[in-house]
Length: 115
Image (cartoon, rainbow, N blue to C red; front, side):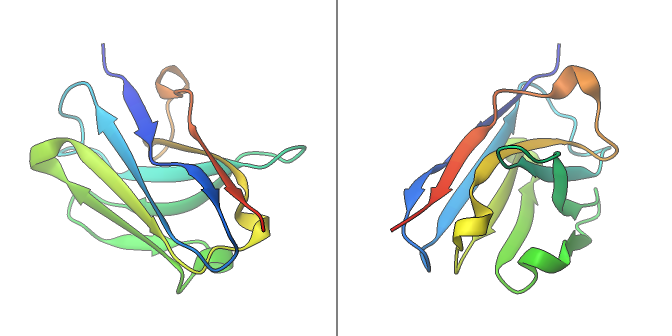
């Protein structure tokens, strides 16, 4: 069964950087577009960044110019590089396919931006 495991979150000051990783239990990246999603307290889950199997990327307007998504199919891993972090980026971050599959939601990784 495919599983997605997110890591790399933590507490960071405003303006800081974090790199999130999403590892799959078996190869799905070669045939699927992938996305990073986030859910802040009291808010709905939102799509933050996407990357196709061919490497074409897109990010939400709220993170454009600050977040970068990438993938390494050989390592079955998707990354989210987050720079110039803001308090409003505080959320639990998840990866999933695009469109998402309900069976693939993992525990996520907590990102807290605070001074």
